[in-house]
Image (cartoon, rainbow, N blue to C red):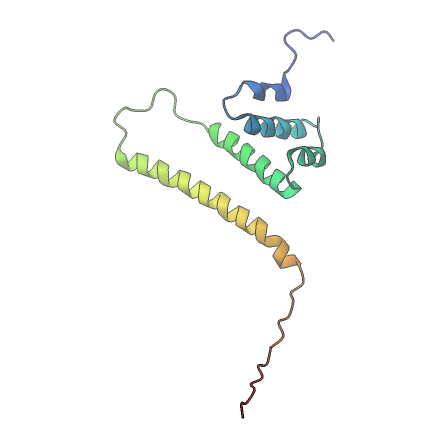
Length: 131
């Protein structure tokens, strides 16, 4: 089958996005893992991060993309948007951020729940009497 058109750029599309070089590099490597062009282990080694951090970065990037793709009303937003609507939008953004922070904290606590607990021995103080 003869296909016409341009070849897909894949992860190279990231190079034209605005942002710092380290952020673009991370996103490019995340996209490469999603496309099956790189393994998570290799990317983690290259970026100097652990797999759990990589999975969190990937999840955050995908969530941001999904949030941006939510359907919105056609046309321009009304010029006289009420302060209440702006406050609701601000609170919704804050809620999303707090949910992500909570999830990150829960992920960090998971290893503590799995590890065996050390018992704390009661230390008895001995007092010396002076003559």
